[in-house]
Image 1: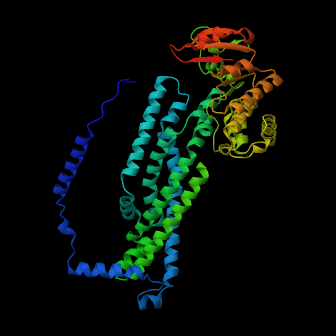
Image 2 (image 1 turned 120 degrees about the vertical axis):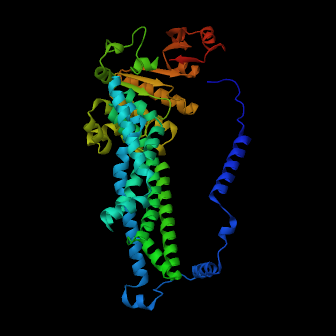
Image 3 (image 1 turned 30 degrees about the horizontal axis):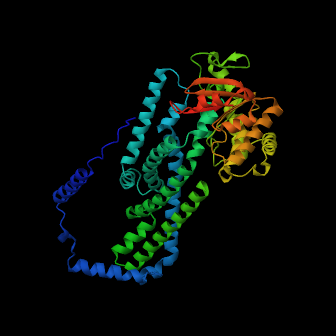
Length: 284
Length: 212
């Protein structure tokens, strides 16, 4: 380690550079504040939309729909439930795939295992790299793009929608899980190793439990994200809250749109409260 | 030196032997078996905080069990294991904590759980690295006395490294002074004079340690 007092890095220049890059990007994109001023039609639409915010609908706004379908709130509640189920199914698959992938992508797993000769270690490195590349491929494609691909491949299929969320989410969980496992405190694992415990048991009972609170808290947070993603998949016609959002907005039934937005907001807030409660219990 | 005795470090000069066998000469599986019979109490919290106290105690036997049996004893411990864990926690003075989460216990109580874990190994020797470094002075004396007593009951060799020379002199019959990896003295406590201690603690070179 260097014992000399380190010189402070030239931060001012770096900040100036970042600022200049930002200006350059804005210039290249042709960003002009004037582009944000709406025309007369746009203004009217915006006014209608935002004035509906204070009076969300509790029944269908159109008489035709009111006469021919289930009550608005029942329909909306059903969509909310389906959104939750989509998200829950996607997260279940993601944890099932993400945890083993995350373990295989971590440094700790391979270091702990008893590969002794260097040839095997090279093989381990290769396997780990392959898993990491696979994970990167899964999460470099956004769930909306997976949805488009799967929609084209299997049509408007529930399992397709669940997979569209589960594939990128597995990749993200695996990456974050592997980092959490590598950063977990090692005291317990070392203590078990010191009293002759086998590597697999050391990993499972000395290391994983130290990372577990973080793993669970992060999974709860991703569940919240999955609910948002499931709602957005409704834009493609899957029967989640997004379907209501896009239909009512397209028809100008803005009061229904706002009810849907508030419901989604309530759902997210509830999940956040829930995941905070879980975290607090685990970390205590 | 403690890690040499525990078989975590193998000697490159001299020998550390256990039950008449040189630890450095053992095959990996035999070394593991030997280690599983050397109880070790660490200075930091080497317990798993989210485990119940009994899980941490029973973890002491993981080195003597195959994988499935180890997994079972962590997830669904047998009545015999729970009974033994309970008796050991009773011996270290906290039987009522058996099923509480370890992170809900105080530092001193956690150290007692760690001692119970070492005893659960059914060890032939008990090593302790700064076992009371994170415990306040009054509790430190109680924890060390407890270790001494259980070691005597079971006829175990107890070796502990301590910074607190007063505690070491008061409680242990033999002191070993180490300074920068070299032996300064190794004699019965009564024969350790103040000038030997002074040599140990002279302020030049690396920080000293006293092994009692």
